[in-house]
Image (cartoon, rainbow over all chains, first blue to last red; front, side, top):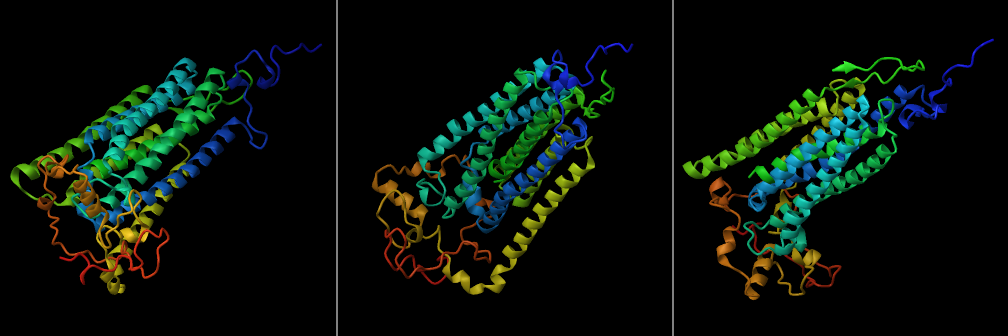
Length: 230
Length: 224
């Protein structure tokens, strides 16, 4: 007489195992591996559209810089390199915490996965805090605003309102991506607390991580273009 | 780096993904921070040299240094943090194709920008310094001087309010005079019409502006 197997045939049915081990791929995928690769390629296609979105802003920068270099020189001298530099470092550190979070998910170190997700969230908050409090707030008060909202009386060039247009749109859309990213990390944290991620299943950690790296890369270009090239 | 390719007790093959070692991740982080300080340091040194020796460093040097470092940093993030080095090559192809598209985009824009004036020379007559206030209308006040630029208007209002402090004219600018950097105000317009406001001969949307709009102030675009 055949003995009853010690384990159920499917890991999904064994409730003693944590959720990430019980996870099963959606029915239209061959297995979890297949699903993971498809999810990742989907995220990369989305990131391609993100790169194209930001390339519009880089293109605007390119056009207006060539047409009015004096306005861009005067304008970039009004930014404080200090805050741009600190924010660059904050975002690079957060990219590291994301990458190591993915690693901890792969190795099953769920405590450090949660810590890394939380640290990334805090880095996003620090970035926005610096951006809004030390930069945007000051610029709103002194009138360094785009186009017809401009009322800064010490402009050195007739075209400074144009420079501020490029600055506000580029950094503003970047900052909105940081806000979205923070929401995604809050969501990841809640799911990680429920034990949904582990070596067998970490699609969302990987996908959100890739998104966050692209946000970091956009800032890697915005920082020299806006703050450093005088 | 190790491949997690073991089968679990149910016979499922686990994700065969490369797990990047912590050493690699930390090394990449340190390299990224180093390049960040290097790019800020290079900009600072360039400015120091320019202002100490009163030499004119061409702007392309500044831009080339900063952007080369940004490209190196991006390569590090994409290869190691985003794991394209170890990943399905299809994702790398998607990424590279996107970059190619962006360069096509920027390249065609550059061609257009460089050649527009040769095709549409007459448009250069209508350039209006600092945009045309009467076309869009100011937001904070109703006093509009026809033909006055946004920048001139900001200065006039600050002077009228008594808040204008001439000592702030070099605000934030620690010793750097933009006219020393090779961008003299006499420099002629580069031939393009991309931000040219055409004179408006009908009432504007806001009703704030006189109907004749900002007709060209003088004959040449910038009045120099």
